[in-house]
Image (cartoon, rainbow, N blue to C red):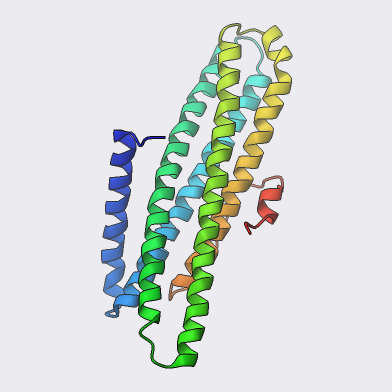
Amino acid sequence: MAMTVSNRSRIIALTAAVIAAGMLSGCRSTDPAVKRSQQAADVLVDTSASLASGEQTVMQSQEALRTLGQAKGDLRPAFDLFVTQLENVRKQAARLRDESEVVKSQAAMYCSARQTDVKTISNDEMRQVAERRAAHVREECDNIKERYAQVNASFDRYIRNLSDLQTYLANELNYGALDSGQKWVDEALKSGEALRGNIRALSFQVELTGNMLSPVPLAATRWPNPIIPTEALAERPQ
């Protein structure tokens, strides 16, 4: 799919923020390689915070859908809230999709520069160990890309389910339509749970990789809300 002007603008803005973060983190060390590692870690920290926000947005949309399903009296206020939350989910999905492009670009540049540095080590044993460690980091970065693909696909599925419900109910907003559509409400809620699980799995992978790159240990995200365990948390891309 071709990238829109709006998407390009968001990516440019995100990239500028990444560069600014790198300039700030660069003050922490005079060694270029340490600066580079810290910059990459800072990008992952920012991404982790964004993912937590994304999971919160999905949870709020689920709550709006549950409220609509249990609404009494006038259905319009609950339906309007549901539509508003759906739009928030769309915006969050677009934001995370753009961020994934920035993270993939930064990871590729970091791994390439690290590999170039490793080749300059004259001690054979040290160089071999460094190459293995660099390969391990590259593998973890590839895992992040796989996790992002899962999250993006899950967002598409969840948004599609919610959009279908919006169209279905908007044309006949009454209890009869709501009752007959309950199985699709449940299906949408289930896809939301799967999406939240994939977001958390990605966040854990981001934090793991960030800790490998940062000279300062990064605190693990403290998720404020419980979630039903999903296979996404146990699976690991091969």
